[in-house]
Length: 160
Image (cartoon, one colour):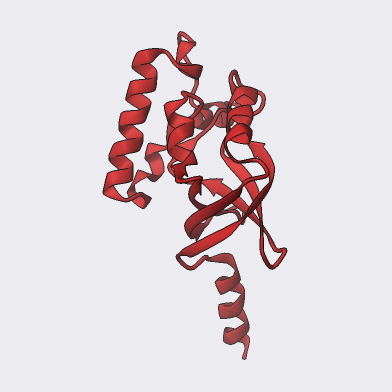
């Protein structure tokens, strides 16, 4: 009985591959949203494959604003298969046929999160990598900065 309870608890923390559809009711930052599904359940979603500047970082507000313009109050489809340590479902957000994760990169308001690229399909890995390179070369968004600090480094410094 005790092992069944433990399995149920573990199952609640992991996510099955699937799709969530609903309206975006909150944009927390440049890579985190809340989706309200048709059953009125809220899902915290972490956009997979990207990492956006933190709120206190340069371009943090611009990244959040960009994502808000893309998805806020719109119906989205989220392709998900993982739950992160903050109990957010990680996935690709599609709005009006557009990959919002990729669009954030193309706009120059997010990095390709290479530490987790193995979780992406080979085609997404390539697209996201190329999008970062193109945004960098064009000096779009955060790439206007002479030496932008990746969010994972910023978080590390903040937690010391």
